[in-house]
Image (cartoon, rainbow, N blue to C red; front, side, top):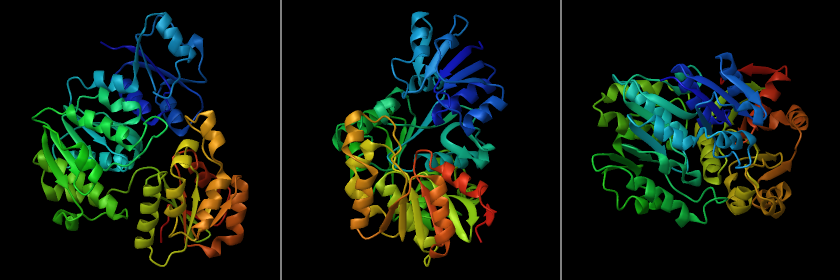
Length: 440
């Protein structure tokens, strides 16, 4: 039966994917979010009615179900109105659980690489005769620049987020665990608390399920030791890595692809078909996405926001372009994360020539987080570790810096999980000497 479903925080990367799948299935889908975005504009073009701003009046008795992002506070007027009217309310992760009741669920989890592994897992199944439904944390060219895919068979591939233990709502048949290190310390007490969530998640696998996990990661090995499902470990020494040819750089991406290859082979998909599919993968939006050239600088947009991911992204760039002088425009994501990992951040940019920092992107931060760290602290810390670091907060001022200094650099890496990707758009839309989508 088709339903009328309202989604609060519909612009979120996971919720937007679910919203569009529900819409394609013929449900009447509406939504709201605090601000407009590319994803929201795309959904509006498909006929989904979306309000900017949250309003009590958006909820009425004609609505069958309300789904909301875990970022939505309990004080949200739409959520409160739905509860007053006894309308069924579900968190995003609870809605995924309901949606996948009859599915064979493949969940991708871990600290880093979830989106790319989800992409490779999807491509691996598509290389065979499978037709999976997918929700992924970025848009893919292979999905017509969408962050979802509605398939026709029982396979459901989902990027499973550990924040607030949300993934514990899922009922996975396969789990791919990429790596583990402390993250989301605004919610988890420490690394052990963080790992405990993954232990609980792995315990949900049935005995006839599969666990594909990183055998090089000590934290991973610790959390999987009691797994009752069949466990398949991948490592940096796996000979199949030599067969994987990608257009995106980084040994970590070969490991990401290996996860997809292992998954595909579980379902008897020919290895060569999978490898051919991988060769044409251009990467996801904001995952080492080459935007083009600006005054002969190659400009790359990347989602890296944790020190480990930043370091790996810069090293991958140096491996691909060994002589390149790299400038990073990095927007720290969360005061809490910046405070907890300031020492790691200070060392992550070692291979870069210059780092430019706008202000910290505030999200889910408490008053004590904001008062406990400033962008100036991070500037000082990175400078002390030998990398020239500048605080430039305004996009126009950053652009003027590159107008004056572009000959000093070969590659510009724009990095962060907030809205720093908009600087790339600003740079190219306001400049003359550009080449969109160019690499050579």
